[in-house]
Amino acid sequence: MRRDPIPAYYRIYQVLRERITAGTYKVGTQLPTDNEIMTEFAVSRHTARSAVEELVGRHLVTRFPGRGSFVQEVDAAKSTDWSAQALEDLQIRAAEADFRLDKIEHVEASEASHPAAMLQVPATDKVMRIAWSRVRADGPIAYCAAHLAQDLAARLPEDLAEQLNTSRVIPLIEKHCDVRAFRVQQVSLAIAADEALAHRLDVAPGAPLLLLQRTYFDIEGRPIYYSDLFVRSDRYLQKIELFRHRQNVALSRFSDEEDEA
Image 1 (cartoon, helix red, strand yellow):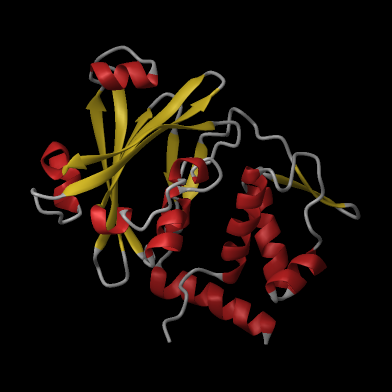
Image 2 (cartoon, rainbow, N blue to C red):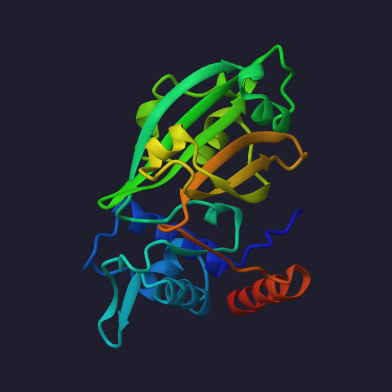
């Protein structure tokens, strides 16, 4: 059986963080206790505490000795600072940023030649394009044009646009298309905004943008999803944290298993 390379505490941290982002745990409310986390996820106290400490370290939660841990207000100055350790982290985490769907359309592969090539879609086929923005009170952060092949697009629900208001694209693809994203390749480019991007991101034509090109693959190596994510360099900071896979991740998981034994 394939072993999960992501430490147990980090998986729990991701779940708790997603609940905070979604508003399940609102600002000022108390996070579940260590005992409650231990019961829900069937883990040791050390693992539960490590998950909460990860939230504390990311400035999402404040721990008060003797009282518990409470969800804190997101610091706007830090809201664009994020770290990626796992595939699930490749997203803009800004609790105050709204998701705004632009359009969902089916286009000829010849009109989206690069995405179609990355998805290995023949030029005679079509691809689905999902375009959306992330917008804060002070303006847009990012604009994304995502693509997937028609055989997967055909399995998505008719109310996809509505579901995107409460769920992200990749989880919906995994849920409805019977595939699972296993790895992602990212290419980062510095580009100048053309007229269309300048309008979408509220910048002057020619302004510098960061372009993140991401291709998601399933465990068999098939490309299932490709996206062009255009972000304002003055409102977005990407910070990557990497494990030395065969040492740190394995040791962390071994430690969790020791605690839970």
